[in-house]
Amino acid sequence: EDWSKAGKFSKKDKIEFYPYNPENAVNEINEVGIDEYPGQALYWIPEQKEIYPLATFDSVLDDVQFEHESGVYKLRNIQNGYSAGYVQITPMSLETEKEQEEAKKDVQKSRGASYAGKTKTLPLNTAFLDALGTRKIFEEIPRTGVDKLFEKQNRETRENIYSSFQQPNILNGISKEGNFNRESFEDAFHYYNSITEKDRQELERIFNSIIPYTIWDISEVEIEPLALMEKEEEETTTNTDDNGSDTKTE
Image 1 (spheres, helix red, strand yellow):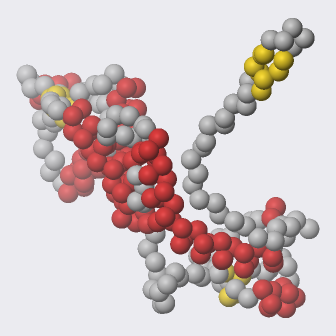
Image 2 (spheres, one colour):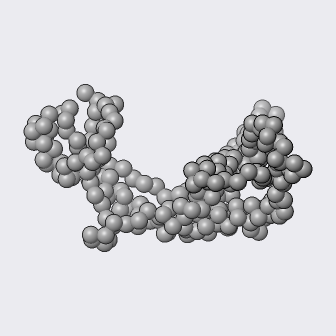
Image 3 (tube, one colour):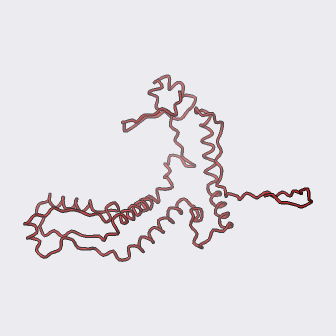
């Protein structure tokens, strides 16, 4: 039976796993049966004991969310023809606490990137229009300098994310000098490979301690460093024809 194709969702909030020990796996399966066997879990903490390591991206979660929201904002704006922002003016008083809460919820539903340029339809009766008089229903909110603000924030967001993972900008297709020379690429590759070498070796050790006990016929894995693609050299051969002329073939 191919266990890699077997899976099901669990509605339990907490699932108990056996601690990682391949030597006990068979006995544990026989104890509860293969259908009820939850498997073993390996909990790995690098270098430190009894401390849960935070993921690298924890420090830039806000930047990641901004990157997503800014993309949604730009999409909504183009879909709505870059409509300006508006605020609704209601000539009625909100007397009860329930009415005030409903008004707050209505405003919240119009905020955020997903609602950029969104149009709302409001039913108006005769009494409402009489009370409104000459006042405008909607007032436009000017959006001065928004494009420059987004350009600045987008640039800072990208740089913060790359910096968190210690990735040189040039590896992500960004060059402040405006060009991509080979020397800069080689320096970036050597730097990134050097700071990730220890992690690659540790991951190899962990995977190779597990791989022999899996269903896949693999003895070991090797995590290769980032490699700069080399341009293949064209092979040139010289042939002499019957007339004594040399011809080159590439």
